[in-house]
Image (cartoon, rainbow over the protein chains, first blue to last red):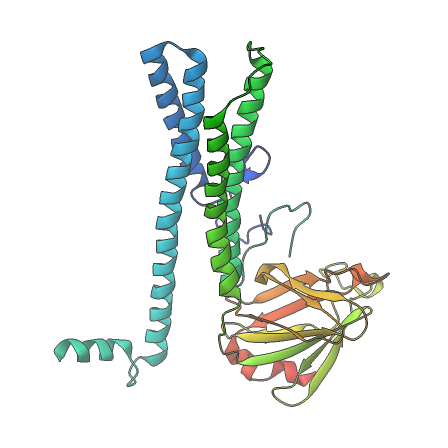
Length: 118
Length: 227
């Protein structure tokens, strides 16, 4: 949550807080994980019920499925998000270096071409 | 700065704060799942028809509810320790500023390039211009460059204070007779606010910190030294 957006800036999505504290809209990967978790919960719980016709146990399986699928999606998504952030940072640094050193002996492109011709 | 009724963290202005926000999101997701599980267990307890009060052995359950929390704690501790050690990394600061807490204002010393020293008092409400922030704006801001590692040496001249700027992920105690050090690298220009974070007397709430972060090129032209 931050100051109101400047003209031209993308609008911040309205926050939806699960249990009053987990901001699903503005936390990266949270909405994706909760949705997949809900789907996994319904599939696991309903599937268990179809095979056993036990309601309470199927609810337990559903809750367990929700927790496991949410956690699994969360870690997978956060890992990829972290990798993406690192790649973005490397790209930003390279662009900055390119702008700063273009045409000089420190030009990264010159160094790269020099090493590939060797 | 924070807006009215803001509960969450402010947007990050340094790489460390970005990492802290990431860790906060991670911990919050784990907390949410634990709360969900506890609420479900509570619901089951309230709706069960089982009324046997003589159950004595539950070895499997006890094993699970010992090992599972240990795993959860490890999942939280590993990223936490990673960030803890990241904050202590030595990164060759280009500039050192000394910040001295007083009752109830801050003194800043730029001693790397000459001996610039100035006080930073909160602007009283009567002196505010339209657009100024009540209880946050000061008469002299701390002007610093972005994208350059900066070292802050923090101490106090009288009682305990704490120099805090939430958007940079900084909070360091100002202790009389001790020099504490913190380093940071700001990633974007702007004006960032903080407030004293250790109770220090009647006007503890009225000694804010304001950083004005500007591009390095402009900082080198010397605007801060024309005070």
